[in-house]
Structures are given as C-alpha cells and as structure tokens.
Length: 447
Length: 70
Image 1: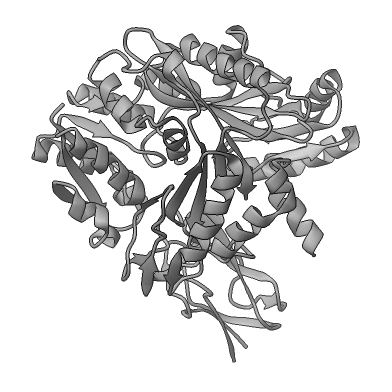
Image 2 (image 1 turned 60 degrees about the vertical axis):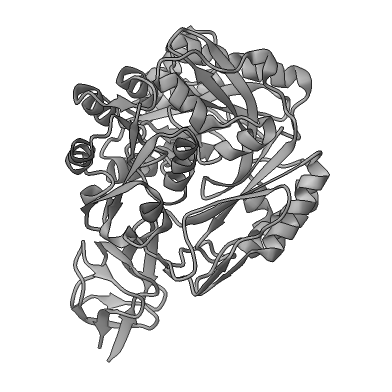
C-alpha cells in the first residue's frame, strides 16, 4: 500500500492523512467545488476535484472517485465514515478495480446494512437482540399480535428507517393501532418502503457501543466500550469511555458479545457493535457499523492505540499488532462534537467563520476541518470540530472539557458550545446517571 | 404585499403551497434541507399566496424571497 485515496472530506480526511503521513503512505484527497479551500485539500499529497457541491454529484459520485484513483495511481481507498463508507456496491467496485477497500468485505457490509438480516444473524450467533418480530408486519392486526406476544410498551419502527424517523413508542394496543397508520405513511414517504416491525421498548435506555478489530487471519479483539447516550435528534453530541454506568462484569459481558458478533460475520477491519442497555444492565444488539466511527478518538485517547493505523495493518493483510490482554483503559476520555448550529433550537447555522481558535491545552486533542475564513456550507454535516479530552479520571476529564469549551473561540456562525457547557455542568451528567432521554428531559425541565 | 424569506441557506426539498392558497401565520410553506437536516420555513403573517418563487431542487440563500403574499 503506497498511495491511499480518501473518499471523504473535512476533519476525518485530515485525520486519515495524519496517520498515512506518519507511515510514509501518500494520500489523495477528492473534493467538491464547495470544499476547494478547506485544509484537508491542501494537506493531502494530491487533490482531485470531483464535482459540484451536492453529494450525489461529488462525494457519492462513484465514477468520479474511481477515475480519480486511476488518474493518481492510488492503490487503496479509505472511505472514512458516512458517505460511501457503508455502501457495499462501492466496496465491490473498488475490489473489481483492483483497489484495496479499507474496510470489511462487500458481503459483510451488505449483511449488516439490512436491519432484519443483521438481527437474524446475531440471534443465531447467540448475541441478545431486542425481543421483536423477525419478519416485517403488514397489517395493524399482525402488529397487534406480535406486540401481545412481546408485552407493552413496544416500539414500532420502519424497517428501512434511520435517524429516529418512523419510530414510535406504543403503550397499549389502541396506541399501536393508531400509530401504525401514520407511521406506515411516513415510512413510505421517507424511505420508499412501508415495511414495519415491532419490538420491545427498552426502558431507561443507554446507548453503549463496543469497538472491535478483526484481521484476515481470524483474530478478533475488542477495544472496550464507548458511552454514547448524550444525543440530540438521535445524533450523538458527547461520548465518553469508560462508561460511568458499567461495572466490570457488565463490561466483560458486553465486550464478549461484541466479539461474538464480529466473529459471526467473519469481520475484517475495525468496526463498532452498537447495543442498547436498560436500567438493569440487560443489553441488546442494535446494529453494526462497518467502518471507522466519528467518535473513534475516544477509544484512541483511552487506550493509546491508533485506529487508522490498525485499519491500514488489517488492509495490508497483516496480523493485528496488539493482543487482547494489551488493551487497557489507561485514561478517561470524553469527546465533544462542535456543530454549526443554534445551541437552543439545534437548527443549522451555515455561514463564514470570521475567527477560529481551538483550545490548546494538555490532555486536549482537536480533530477539526475548518479555520478562520472557512465557509461552512449547507451541503454537508454541521460538525466542524471534535474536541477530545482525557484525564487520569472522569472528574479531571470533565474539568478539562469545561476549560477547553471556554477557550474555544468561533465567531461568524452559531455553535453548540454553550449547550456542551450546560451538559458538562449538569448534575445528572456529573453523576454519570443519564440515558438517551437526557437532552429531552433537560428541555422539559427548563420549559 | 408581504414576502416570506429563507431563514438560512439550503436546498428546497418540498413546496407545500401554491399560488391562490390561503396561509396562516406560523404555517409551514416550504421545507429546506440544510446540513443534512430538514428545516421548515413558516409564513410570518396571514395572507393569500400571490406567487411561489422557488421550485424543488432550487438552492436559496439566507434572505432570499420564497413566496409573495397578497
């Protein structure tokens, strides 16, 4: 592997360039017209313009990306996260073109990309899944029958759904029958498919995920967990590791389940197994992300490992350079996602950054994609930076996070920094006693 | 004549009214997509739609006129 094309943008493109450079691997950036002046374009060894700003014409434009790889003589493609990273057809196309796709096989991506298939595979492997139907339901009667078998409350979901759209909690049969009609209409409008399924509603849910890594020789290890329950609009805002909610026994069971899940599909690469955990520490498989995660630096700062370096080693066909016994939580790490958005309404705030100065402190890492003068455009995700703090314990990490947020200067656009400071100062957050309902509950308290 | 303007830059993904429709203050008239999020734009006053200035797929900037009310 001598030259890697990065089929992504912004902070994650810069992050991948950093590790490639340290290993003497050349990099190729691809960019849309809107991103011409961004730091990642300058920092790559070569950069290729692939199209106009909207993603279907640029970052999702498979033909333009493959042509850029051919033109520059790249021998591998790193997809980053989002965009084409979990697109099995793209992974297959790379393979057909003789390019190394830095990620799992197209077959595994496809298998994990379909929710019901993933559920079935995990259940057969002995990984707990949320009790629910194995096939989509097609009528309110079918839904009610499944729900009666599970017991109320239940969650009604669109089979093709995502991002929380088409999801509804139903406390009894009347609610379910009512929800069914409207949820099915929405699912059809948003996803083009009205297949619905019913599963048990998990009370006091926490979203905890496990980082795993598997090599081509069949070795699979876990890199401990990440606590990701602080979310707004079903999107993560703050992640931390270790999780303040887990005890050693629960941690061990969770991490072992993640390894079982990865082995069940013959996983090669780094990946994440997402679980939902209830107040009694029962946990269930949610989904598997077959790529590098936005919040991977939490694991890096906790363990001292470089996950992009692991990806490159695995893609070269080498054995994992680290053994399970060597993976330890050396520090407590917290990641704060800085979004270009209103801190109260969470509405997007595109615009030009007139001044930008990220915090510079011990124990603080900043992965960002912008600088003073950058135009934050409406075409892409609102995340402009990730601030990852670490300390010898959780209290120290929180203190550093507060200091880092106070030092962070961004003008010209709105950011969620005031909101992140509120979270860090929140009493329930400081006790580590929070669920995925944290942001909602805070809103209810203040209004 | 009153204008409804875009409150942020984005792409028009849905136009919910047409010329001749009566709209009320606070009613969603157009949906924009900005930063991967759907942002509904509301009419600020009651009125009858005289003209819709945008189409699905159009890109609008903050302050651009979306529709004209009588």
